[in-house]
Image (cartoon, rainbow, N blue to C red; front, side, top):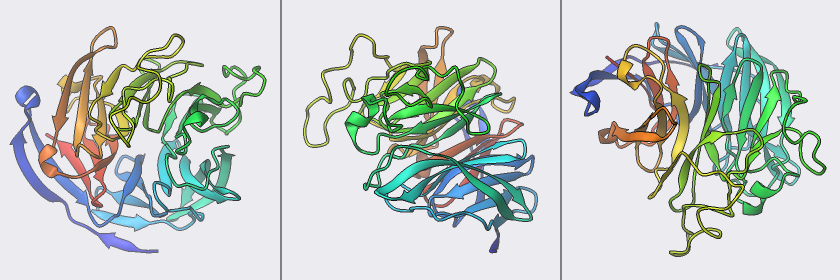
Length: 355
């Protein structure tokens, strides 16, 4: 067990270009490696995952970090490692890249926390996304009242995303105990996996359930251009790699056959050039009241928080890029009960954005 004490550091007071609202930016913790996922386990404690394969808890009162025992072996190579964490009452859910025969697979697990240790670790679903490469695992978790949604990348094999006989390039829907809902859209479809909720995704690393509006949103990486924000619909095909707004890495050639095809969904927003999106949250809270209902995502390549305001028709009213001066890859986002915005960066820092 390791214990690290870190102090709060007030970085700056500034006037946000957005609505001229004042904010404070505080560094909560540092030296943490790549913090891939975060969620609250109490009002004053944030559980976090490190892609390197460690999990810990930041105590917001004592300014300390406790690392936890009980994490299983993960394949921490390339884009793989210990990925997302989501909390539902006393149940913790994790996604990680699990070493298996033939390579590794994005895996969903559950556990509880007791005395600074993860206990009762159980793999709920080892997805059929096995590959020897270490690319495009996804993977975020979103929780509704009764279901888990999990995003899985195409594992660097494009044709996976249109193939319903595997989990890669899909968003899955499970019951909270890891079982499959009987009303999933492909339960009765031959040669299709029951867990699939939507397909045609490339590498969705942001996923959020809007509890108020009962909607699921995702954001995924395009290739060279073509990152997408999508409103996820039951059974829908989001087109990858048949349609895309991105270009091939090897030259100025469009991926697929174009940007539109009948029976394939169009994104709510796409980014050209790419911002390399990470986590996705919906802003709820009074601290930045003018942001209510806005989508916030981290940008890895763009190194900022990307804020999207939606109109009543769920189209995009505006996009704003916040905290560009930090010049840090923003990996995970979390909204506190009072409306503070917590975020992690690949430089090993966790910050709080507040008034």
